[in-house]
Amino acid sequence: MKLVEKKYRGSLICRIVGYPISYAIVKMLLDEGPMDLDGIARRVNRSKATACQHLAKLKLANLVRYEKKQQKTSYWIKYPREVRKFLHCCEDLVERTTKRIRKDY
Image 1 (spheres, rainbow, N blue to C red):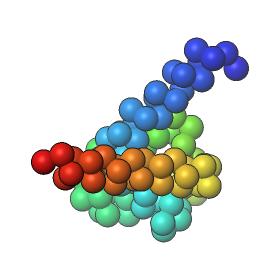
Image 2 (image 1 turned 30 degrees about the vertical axis):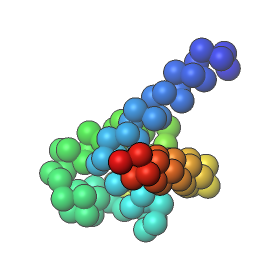
Image 3 (image 1 turned 180 degrees about the horizontal axis):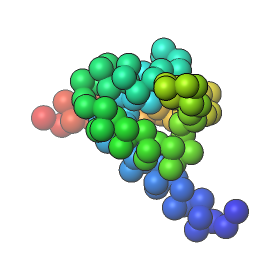
């Protein structure tokens, strides 16, 4: 894979996970395992259409997998170990920058 493509994919993941709803969906799927659209929409307190849009973006970034069984579709995180590490790094950075802001003011 070319360096430019890797940079693009990395920025895509950051942009998509940067949405609060997408972030919440990723955290929830990591913590609770596979869920269907109804459960996801209910838990993030959004319409099914909104949850579906965020899931489509997460699928585009290759972070979420899905499987259709009869009338239900289950979603889960494709690379849970790596995604968990990525979110942990983001949370550590937020914690660090928040401390710095409190210190500066």
